[in-house]
Length: 267
Image 1: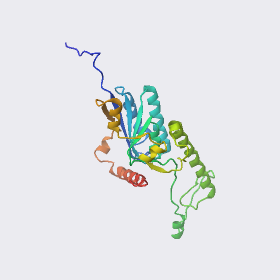
Image 2: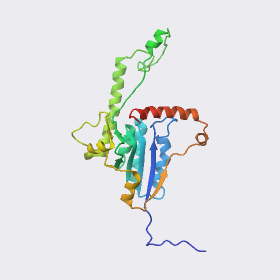
Image 3: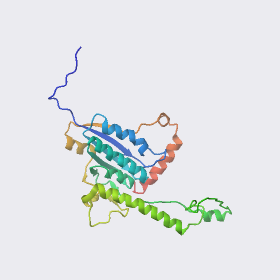
């Protein structure tokens, strides 16, 4: 029986694992960009075939700070365990939680017109108590705990509740700022406040240290690893229900949410 011989002088082609991370970041079942969905994806990308690098292809307007943190920590943990360099490539947008993910890479590249930044935290809602009053609808709420019904959209706004919410947002914002400064370090411009929620194009983001360079995934990786580099793309697997269109309503709601999130950045 003939056996394949491993020739010591035949050099293995370098491989880059490409992980596509697109859409709204949310723990909701309507979103696919969350830690539960991406845990097996990242495990395969970092460990299957021992790639020379992992490239994150990011196109996200953000979302849940917790899910962003969970995914980001998983990326860094796997990068450390496997000693694999990580590169982030921003497509249309990497804003808010999307930028949180990009920052976990060792280097960040973007297109000239990519939208980057939005390092801030937001909470939005509606107040409809006047509408209820107009139609004579009485809201009845019973709680055990004085803060249990805080920020109820069907009741007038309570200044104490608003102050409490602002404190929570500030704490999350501090976590975001700490994450960016920890990973970007001395690359960040010292003469600008980068944490106001402002956004930049890819080109201007280089000037303030949020991005390392202008470049697209394939040419940059070929420049680093040679023209013979192989790409293996990884992404979440869709369940049979989604593949056959059974969850159309759920997908439709998710699509509306994503469109609204991308629309903030004119996309």
